[in-house]
Length: 171
Image (cartoon, rainbow, N blue to C red; front, side):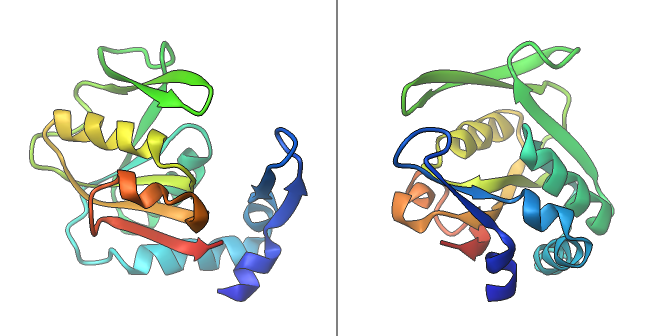
């Protein structure tokens, strides 16, 4: 895993002073590393009856789509408020400075569907916790919350369902 971690570029003081931003675009741009990362994550779920992958705007769309393709499922998008065209369920949640709202189509899955919820990075866990609530409100079973990277020192997994968090790369 160290070879994949080493491809991710650190950007100091982005988006504000004191933050060390983990730039995953370098890993996504490297075909061999991107394929390996997707395969390593997908291998964990092959044969587990996953019916749908949920990708969170925006980088979660990239990983979620690739995993859905690899697992032979569809992909459902969770977007910021006002971006989905059909009837939606919404969830407002707190951020470090303010709040945000996410939406999912009301007919995204049938009750009891087994889904993976995917995003690129686990930091504080607020966004994923809101999406887990939305998915469960629609009656689906969250098999696991999946991340390419995790900033362990922020302890975001404490906000997520116990035992249902997987991160490929941990910082």
